[in-house]
Image (cartoon, rainbow, N blue to C red; front, side, top):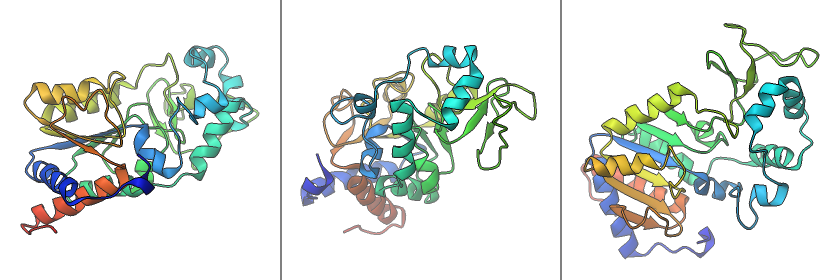
Length: 274
């Protein structure tokens, strides 16, 4: 539902308060986020009406193999995007800012109620909001990564000579590419290890803006449930996860997460939220 059509009722707020009690009393809270969380930042989903790929065309399904075959060409296209999907993605991400949902997750972490955040998004908005323990399973559109040692580089401080492409890692001389995980590219192993380690200790998972149907992310909430933990879904609409979620909070991520944060703070401080 559009954020402008949403109204917080006392009954729904009471359900959010129940979710907050689970979060405040958890041993370890982990969040899992997807593209739906960034819609309020002006980033449409990739597919469907108005989607980035619907509008600009999908990236090639063999993108990683193309990069390996012609890394210099891929870098020229990255530095000066001309294809519809690449140019549209760059322009959309550059215009986006974190919304209330991103801010709420960063505040939950600072309050000690979010040990790790796993995101399928590549838009950098969680980092911009101040999230610290962030696991970006599909990478980050802005960052760079060595394909050999997996070191990540901030493009603001990484020198690129356009006359000598592709750039190479200063540590191991491996080829550097954009950090976004292309179609056909394996997820960096350290990120996957971090995800599974976080899920292993998690007894409450907040799942926001995603139906969690794409693996490996799809397995994370199910693993929490298998261990007897709780899943709290935050989504404007029902999803495949709704039927198995411990609590399903159906509303715009920003408004729901902001209210969840309010109740968690009150519960954590021993107060009574209102």
